[in-house]
Image (tube, rainbow, N blue to C red; front, side, top):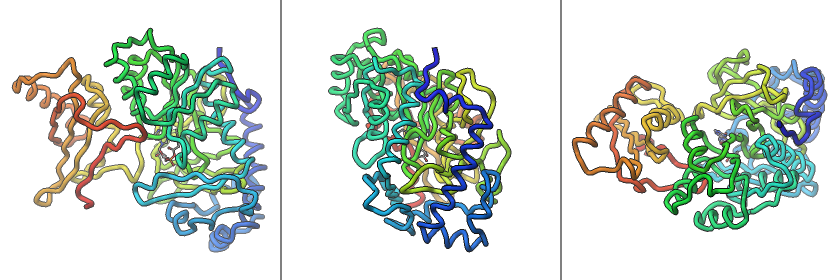
Length: 433
Ligand code: DLL
């Protein structure tokens, strides 16, 4: 039986959703025009006033907002409410020097938690469930967002945050956690550790996982589902737009419903900025139509994606986005060929390897090199050099047919590649240094 947190919204007619979007967009444009000089200037540069935006059909007229705008406006330049009405900030990790600080009113937090509650119920969650939130708490949005959603559903919430994997497993077992929320790479690590402890899927009380914050392949989903004996659901979001819960997967497990009553999604050509028709691959752009403190109009996410309005078996009517295929700024260009780390992951997992790998790109004598290091599983581990060479060649061939590129593959011993408790770092591009 499909469960909904807000059925009248999640299953609303397309006409109703469009009506909400029309009304809220017009209001939002007026709000930023009145309260954010940065937006007013950008609109004036395009010769626009709020009167030019009469419905969501006029969305394409508005200028884009990019990460560069956010950086320029840091910290308060895009805040649309007096600070005394703001109650919280969240922030990205800033490991790539791109720290973003987003502001929330209490109303913003309320709506964000609703979005996360929708995701938990879509994964089968109810107030009978015990939900362990193993995303990081603090500035990162993962922990606070799912924590709030879990409360709204009425689950017993275990706020473990990330890290201390043995303690995570102790809580899952002792408190019979039924839902696990964390990054997919941390879920895989928890699963691996459980296996080492001799736990089989039927001894693990979990039934569902809500995993996101980084790209993960279908193959990785299968692996996690098998190891933990659960159904694994994807969840997407970004700090700029609130955090997790911009979109989430339902029982169909075939793409994520965008919460269209709060966010309008578009796909654009990243080079020209032109809006692309449904079903075309391009850059995902979002407009937040209900955010009060930190509204973003046409924010370019850099995530490469596709949208579909095909009818979904779950009964939800909101548009679905596919798993992001990578970020336009994560895409590697190696010897002129476009390579997404997710394509490499697919080849490795299809050959039976675990998702413990690292991609090292370098430039030697003016030529790019691609070195993929991947762990053997304990079962396949051997010191027979002939066997290792044969396996490496299989992967080299698999990568060549997927990417059209020669790669070097090095098989390494189990447990050599460092595990991640949050977002995994898969790529080391030495060319930039
Ligand atoms: O990662 C928010 C989040 C927390 C989402 C917990 C889901 C679960 P940021 O740190 O701002 O926010 O990173 C946002 O992460 O633009 C995508 O590139 C990537 N991302 C997030 N979710 C997914 C996903 C959080 N399900 C950036 N699949 C986004 C692929 C994802 N990439």
